[in-house]
Amino acid sequence: GAALFLSVTGQANASRVEMEGIDVRGCGNASGSCIGVSSVCSVAIANVSISGVTNGSEGGGGGGIRVESARHVSFAGNVSVIDAGTRSAQGAVSVVSAGVVSVDGRMYIGASNESARWSGSGLYVWLANAQNCTLGGHIAVRGYRGTSGSGVYVYSERSPVSIVGAIDVGDSESGGARSGGVTIVSHGSQVALSGTIRAQRTRTSGRGGGAYVEMNNSTMLWSGMLECVDTYAHGGSSCAHIVGQDSRVGLAVRARATNSSSAGGLRTAAAVVVESTGGRVELNGTYDIDGRDTGVGGGIAVVVSSVEMVSNASVAVSGVRAGNGSGLYVSASQSHVVTAGSVTCVNVSTADGGSCVSIVASNSTVESGWDVSARDCRGRNGGSASVRLTNSSATIGGTLRCRNATADFSGGCVDLYASGSRLRFSGVVDAAQSGGGRLYTSRGG
Picture 1 (cartoon, rainbow, N blue to C red):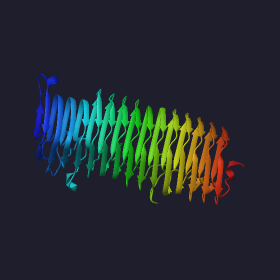
Picture 2 (cartoon, helix red, strand yellow; picture 1 turned 60 degrees about the vertical axis):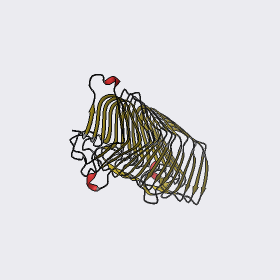
Picture 3 (spheres, helix red, strand yellow; picture 1 turned 120 degrees about the vertical axis):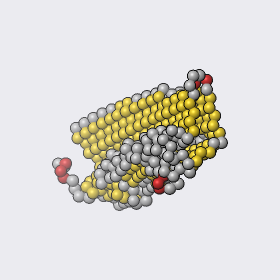
Picture 4 (cartoon, rainbow, N blue to C red; picture 1 turned 90 degrees about the horizontal axis):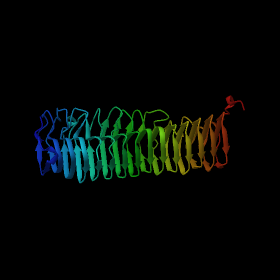
């Protein structure tokens, strides 16, 4: 049902298709894609424009461009797809079952009016046993209102994925477990994110207002830039949400979140959330979270179980006044956690734990040496930092500075609590104009 469809039979392994300078208009009522390519060896698409579609595609495939079963797929030059969506769970531009995928140049996917928005993703890539997928150049998605998609969605089974260019998603919504911005799901793959991901005014009913990454038996290194502005998630992180299962999750990202919010709980409402079971988590890089007095949730939340975790990140959180999470929140179960780096909080309050740093550990070993600074902050227990240990062992060092920090219950600057645990505190506390609230006598002392 495509307006322009190319299929090769017979010697498909030797076939090559090149599309350049094609302008397709008015294919909105097609039963498939505007442009469809199937069963070829190599597909090269450059300087293609699709526009003039007012109602989106009725088809089950990619509404604008769909390439299926090709060994090599490349996009270059200027590729523009406007008002050519899909009612399926795929995308306006879909690549399914390819060996090598590369995007270079500029790709724009957008909707020009309210009636032209679709239910799938903007760019949809599905890979299994592929050789490589590299998203470079500049990919922009605008005005997308999906119920089951994402601005950019990549699914990978045993296939390396790299984002080396810039992905810019704005004015978009999503549903389910997918982010309004970028979603990556990996099974047995290597994922390298060295480019830039920007999300502005994106929303999701799931997790990750700007980005969602799911890792299963995989390895990820995120070393690029992440920027979220006015992003929202109903069930998870307001900016970026990473879930790992028996995976190695490495974050060395330069992240900035401004006025992002979430309706999630204590563990999941932060701007950046990492949840991992098994494997290893490395948290490095720099994180700047500005709630502008309206953000709900904390800065970073890390929840690990049976994980080896190492952190040397630099975190700055400000203006989160209605928070239900700390500037940096770490929950560890049956794990080994080693932390360093710095956490700075200004004008932050939380309904649970310490305002700037909270560590909750059970059956774990914790070695913490953060340089923590809290000014004009309020915690439930710990105006700056809170440590809760159950059947664990912890060595807490570093420097904790408090200026005008208060706690509702105890520990105007630092609050330490241990049950069936070994706690060694060798840090330096520098407190001024800070104090606890009511005496919490239920501890029995």
